[in-house]
Length: 45
Image (tube, rainbow, N blue to C red; front, side, top):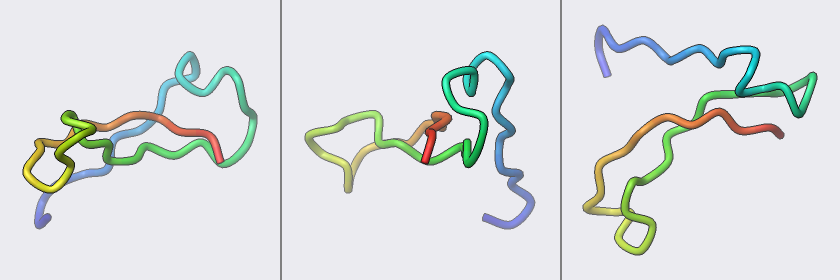
């Protein structure tokens, strides 16, 4: 994780919620998360 930067969420991705919008790692393969690659998705909490 050294040198990696957390992605920032754009306004459009967080349009549905005003607060607590974070970029989180989401497994690409939902049925095999352990061996899956990850991508970032903005999630409202």
